[in-house]
View 1 (cartoon, rainbow, N blue to C red):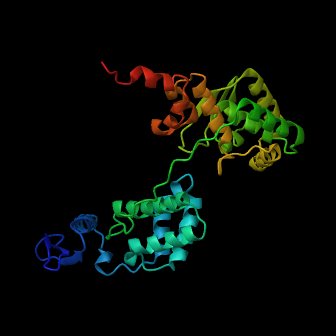
View 2 (view 1 turned 90 degrees about the vertical axis):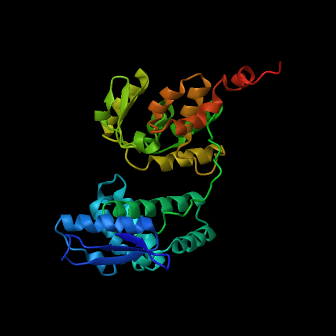
View 3 (view 1 turned 120 degrees about the horizontal axis):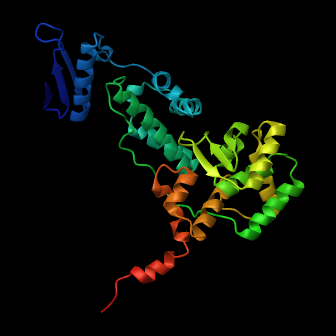
Length: 329
């Protein structure tokens, strides 16, 4: 049974197993928390397990994070990196008892991060990671209390302009890559990114097994899903010959590309150097009349919303404004 107490809190009062069994009483700030605990307590009884949360959950923040990592995080593509970052957050909080965490704890942490020069987007990522941990542990019954950060809103961020290179800028940067870059791989990784819209890490990660005549397959993708993109015969033969000789592109090509951009004198939007060739592919694709749904598949976006950021570049975009607006009779 769940009932509201005069204090405004909600009490769970149950006897898992029926009359004569041990009685369980616990109160919560909200009805949803009480219902969650009731379901969890009954499932523990049905599984023949004890109910340790009847005693106060004294696990520290780091211990709760480890529970999440072992049960779920280690199976994520970026699980180890995310776990390391979450541990740094917990240490910044002072590793308190996790059941005593509050929304205000995070808000203070976020304010200090912003004051220290950390971007709002990075802070929103932190919040997303924390919510993912507590939501997953609540979902699986590893916690009897609710996510303390669930009601915090991310910082609203104005959408950044998507930069791209024009034809002259492309020629200048690629001339720098051909003539002055000592890294033997950077030019071809840049070509793959520009000609297929691949993320830099996707292009850098291919091997011979990812190539077929006039086709490249990316499998180290953000979504975890493979995708294949047509390439020119010239690019196919050039990449194939290069990989036959070197085996891979290595892992430091982005630094060589950044230096080439710096030498070119071309100013890019802040934080977009690594993605500028991907944005350039998408922008030119749309400006030349490419279909937005095709672009979504080529870029590997899970949602069309992401791809629609380029829709305003379509050649008929402004014409449609004139054609489709209401007419005065």
